[in-house]
Image 1 (cartoon, helix red, strand yellow):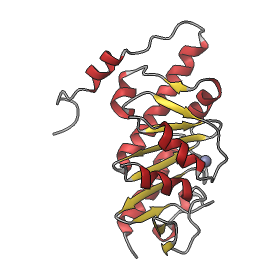
Image 2: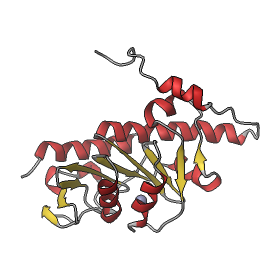
Image 3: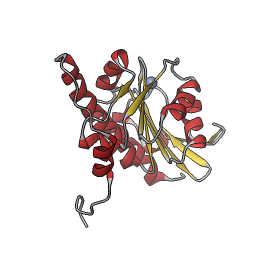
Length: 212
Ligand SMILES: [Zn+2]
């Protein structure tokens, strides 16, 4: 079986997404590009009982190279992102705070150091597209900017990055930031947004955070 360890890492990532409330049951998906191959979670299967052999490996056109299951129904959108952005991982979630924000705003502005550190920039809300359509991928590429996430209006989130950890962190901290922003919005008071200078200062390398 190709990439057995990586297959398990995809499942572990999906289980972490579930633990943080970003998905439920079989919702969302995780994809990882390795060269010209893509490992993807299968469609309509609960992560809790998923096994490495349930992960599907496709080529960049979506043809199954190895696997006994049908890949995620969002595969076309995911492949579009992997082919048009310099990223290796795409995570799709239905995280409720981000979806709630998409109903009332067109972006999550730079509201906190967490957002700058983990998501890299303000996050745009892409227009509605039906699920499982390549349009989800096209709109993600269109609205990505410097951020590691795009919110899909009335649907969920596309988070992406150089590896599983980076994309997962972006999705988790996006949800935290959406929660903070929605709470602030609900007061009806003006929102204090970081300036570009403040955000750039926060984003500049300082070499302390993290273990050596
Ligand atoms: Zn979805």
